[in-house]
Image 1 (tube, helix red, strand yellow):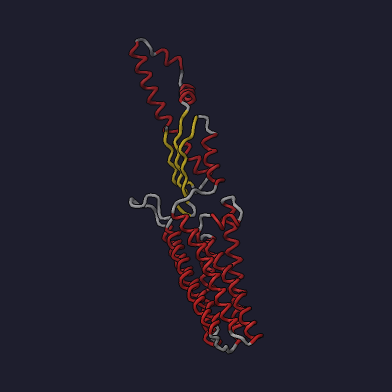
Image 2 (image 1 turned 60 degrees about the horizontal axis):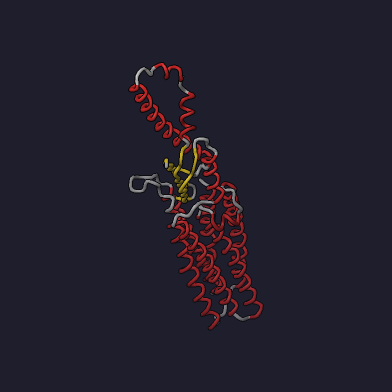
Length: 333
């Protein structure tokens, strides 16, 4: 299991455990801010389940209908996940919080709510710490800082867990403040205000995730460092005289398609071929002009085969330099 998949599994387990506790706390207290947190957990459970589906679907092997595989299916499920956060978690929390602000209803069993929220804070914090560790490991693999990876890294799963857990931790803190202020002032409007803040927080994180997954569904280029490493492999080859029309697109969290047109140095390839043959023996076969013609035709065929061999060698070098370059298409110009 990858670190991202582990992060999703841990987040799902945590959400199941504390989600049930929040529902019980809401039924005991009648607090809208705890209701918002319960909805947050329910939305997260749904979202993490969708992320698990996305991870499993993306592992399917390529077939004739989808020759480049199903790597981008992760982004579809992550997009659905973010949409659920926006419309369910955010929308209901804001609406119910507004109702509590306009017409405050008294709360009860406040201490039970506070205990549940404190336990939730510890559990969500632990899940966030593991998620950050997973994203940090993925960021190192792409030679990016963790903050840059959160913005533009290709793995939507670990990033979604980190953002959702961050929102969850902040949400629990807001819920605690709402309950404390309600207890302190005796005004349940603070409870509703906390619910509105949590709803807005969920909405902002959902919009960020929606935009991020939309970008990856369009197939952006990977990090500039990855592209530079791939181009450098071609530039350092003595048989490559020019590189044109380089196109690189992200097919999935760990899959990249690289395409380029190459101008080969015919003289260098010819020198390599001649170094493998005896010029004296070649000269000895020339008795008539037709012999020279036949030799040149044969040599031309060998040059063509040599170019094909160089393409295969360069594709292998690219795959070794950048393991995620699983689909390499080099075309002689």
